[in-house]
Length: 490
Image: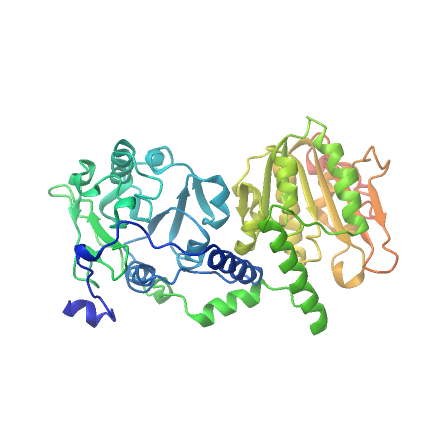
């Protein structure tokens, strides 16, 4: 244990087998509800929550820093997602970090690169010898129980790990969480034990009542085929340490909208979010009650929901007030959401992309999408001309011929930094007269209570773009230089 103490490990007492209970300790219902409410409030402010168990402390403060600081481990897979693992995404952001979880409802806690599938199907998603590290903590005995499934999962991990790659397994020692003795696994015999330097052991038992153990395995090198060491670099930033509280606070500040004005407005927003989250806990979604939302939800959405021409739909920007759209569209459409803020993944659809709109072409091929709804994004984060041009150029590329782009924005000076009539990216679209409203541009005055809001419908095509038509529709694509000279702004 001397080496472990040198690395800052404390209180590494071992629980004897006779002291281990047969069942996991249970929390009261009131304790679980209080914990969930506190987590929801923290999430509103973009703060991650973590379990405070001793085994999690060892994982997060001892095991993770070792692999984060070692550049040999570039390609990492974390198995199993939940609210207490969402914070790991930011920690591993400088790695090629993946998550996998079989429950689609938990994808909101996964990484940008997330797989919805079982661990047994890992070879369907990665070529052989692709990964350097697989972390499989709290999976065996927590859903992955049958002997045949365990064998397939371990064999799948072996296949996708590179020679010298590490498999980290965390298991509980109580009887109810040991339906299958992992030590008897035939597939595990292909691995070699790996003595983890900070703990100086390949089998570490934590000081927990449920006797949680960390087992370290290495995929052996083939004889005469040692893995080459990575090339040295002067970039010290690549050696990422455990995130500090200052770093977490800085990321939280960057994610916030500080254009709220007085403290009373901020308090009002907090109360509104708290009520929305409490309603969500009992299965009730919340919506904004503005007139522009009324038009969007009761006029625009029904038209596209009932038209089978528009099957692949992308909604841009997620919040508590858009979460209810997921159920509405997922029943009938191939529905996607996109938002650049990682913490807003929880509001997104099952098919969610955590990236800026400018990167849309990384996730869709040309012509993949039938409808893009971009409401309340321009002027509310998408403000710089270069970003605007890149974002809506990407929308054009991903829309099919005849696909529709809907833009909703607030037509006031401070929320309209680059008037739509000056956008070059809209020159390839043409106005789309939306049948229920008989117009390509809808102006919603809100009786002076909020900035006036406009909806524009666009279709991707060439054709003159009237400066006052903010919403356009798409027809067939043509080359830019084939347009008439009247394609500019008025």
